[in-house]
Amino acid sequence: MEYNSSIPIYLQVMMSIKRDIVTERLKLGEKLPSVRDLALQYTINPNTANRVYKELENEKVCFTRRGMGTFVTEDEDRAMQMKAEMAQELIDEFLKGMKYIGISAEEAINLVKRQSKEETKKIS
Image (cartoon, rainbow, N blue to C red; front, side):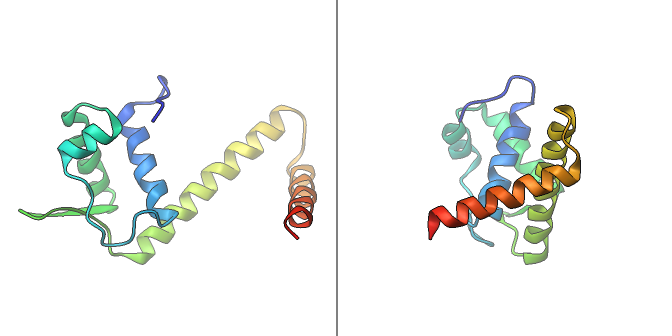
């Protein structure tokens, strides 16, 4: 994973795990790697990996069973909430970018509709 120096690494790893959950690469209830394995997987310090899991637990994204490990939440509503939050962030950034270059929200929506139709034609 390539890290953005302006965002703390633990937040970037958390986002990666959340993305894997909402895209179902990680299934609800699935066992997550140990802290040590997570550190190796993301090439981060084990203390950072530990913080990732603690923060995710605080957000109810995962839970730990003593002696068994850390697992993805089994709460489908929580997963859907995360997906909605991520979608909202993407929409906010998109609209902010469009506004910056002088395109109104309505114009941006029309551009997205037009692009969506073009993509649908390509697939057909």
